[in-house]
Length: 239
Image (tube, rainbow, N blue to C red; front, side, top):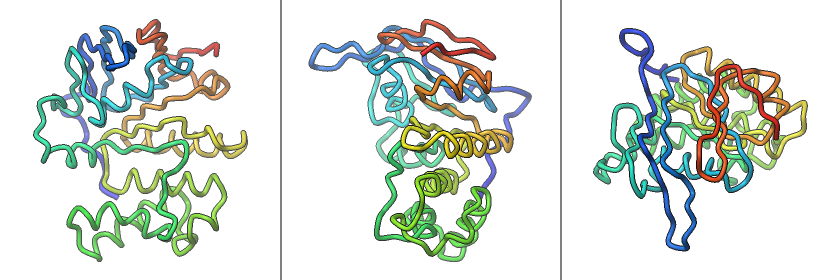
């Protein structure tokens, strides 16, 4: 697994939202004049009730949506001004993990993880080597030949994390990564994400899990009705 590049000259902003608003045709105002800075190496929780704007922020960061106004910068690029041909490269630098795993059911663990490398032009040997590194990181080397329906929920989420990391992204976004898991397994996944952060990857985790947020005391960015109402280091979350 390729390691993220270290930031030059100390901390550097990897994610910047400048006065970002997002309006949908049905009249919904998902974000209102949001300003946000996330630096290399940060571990951030994005919290708030359903409809607060968390998912919209995530979609903007991976260019599934464009802002109605304002600018979104990810790893030095203004996402709204990117050519269509540049979007796949952006998404290799931003790994994403979802609540429902989104694994390919007819591919093995190893094939799920390595698929992203093969479709971007890596050789079979390169894909195999990087896949093995990613599986070792998440503790699934012995499960590489199993299919998703042969795995526990925690193992499926570990596979999804390995797939998100195999390209060596500088940023990992996790959207409710423990939402479908029991409490013990949830903590195992969070400990894995802490390790990923320790290795240099910037983490943005959208979650409703106040217990995890309050136990870790990391940065908390609280959204409410499309506004950032609180952004603090070592924050707490009263859900």
